[in-house]
Image 1 (cartoon, rainbow, N blue to C red):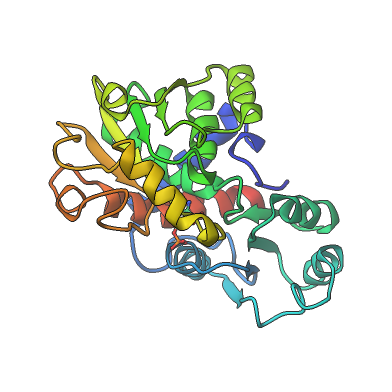
Image 2 (image 1 turned 90 degrees about the vertical axis):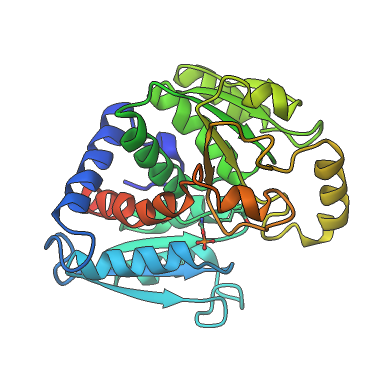
Length: 297
Ligand code: CP
Ligand code: NVA
């Protein structure tokens, strides 16, 4: 199977992945924790930069007894004339899993159609399901389940869209605050409703945070949106979307990182005791190890 969207997993399958993640995490955070990838190779395609996704997948493969190959934008023929479908079929003859971070979501869909090994979405313009796995693991650890209210304060971007679907799958109480015109796609909201619950959608960050247990934010300008930078910074700051210590009451602060201090979040808020962003980042490793063992089982 492929993992292109968080709801490619059923609730039961998601619980299985998270339980595998917790089990692997408890065995040891560092060092070899399983043989699931013994003799196996993960091919990692990156059209965009990455710190966490690249390092957590590569380290995860090593810890599972396998090996990962980094395929950056100038390392392979993809993006330089070789079609997605040819890349998918050729890589499938070598590697056991393909992870891809690309711009166009349609490209991971095509990779998944033509690959004969599992394809994992490592972020597209529309979705970041591996981040959601780590986010749900982090929330499950903190709240001993999903009985929590989360306020998303920021752009209705890839990270937000996957989180909306993940929240619907597990039954998290979610409110999404975005400035007017920067909301989550209607198709995602409809899909969330089909999965169990669409989030409450508002444009006032303070109203969203009121009564929430967790405040989650992300950059205002995602990779690939550089030409919209001035316009977005202006719209988000004017609408009061910066996460400050004032906006943050006693909520835990989540951020998928990288953070742009002084834009979507202040340095003080990110460095405050409420911030759990480093646990969240660590959980990328454990969640993806859970996912890899699940996909290879
Ligand atoms: N959160 C996340 O995906 O980070 P990277 O861009 O560093 O991989
Ligand atoms: N929304 C951000 C997430 C980075 C991990 C982006 O797409 O750039």
